[in-house]
Image (spheres, rainbow, N blue to C red):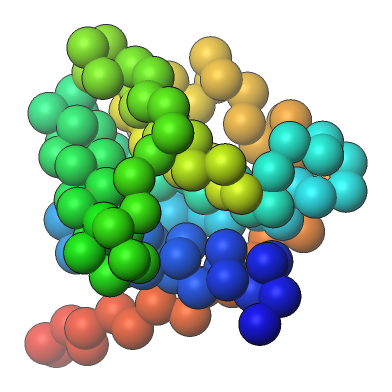
Length: 127
């Protein structure tokens, strides 16, 4: 398994955790080329400060439990409530308050990077 595929697998676990706690706008970008920071950057939006922290905690818990005790090498923004950045080295997870999107300019920064389809299994809504 390539390092990139391993990162995608981990990010899928993180995205499923975020989705489970009702994060919005979960997007994964392959940023190996244009930015050269890391293999993958995942962004999950949340509707309020408490949910930002809850999503980040759920992601961190699942990556620890399901990815061999994986812990972030660095965390930022945990006291802010507007955003949390979890740096795992070969990928970075960014959770933010959806109203902060313009401030971070994420779409502008990564608009040319290919998005990765995480194929999350959303429960069917009862209609």
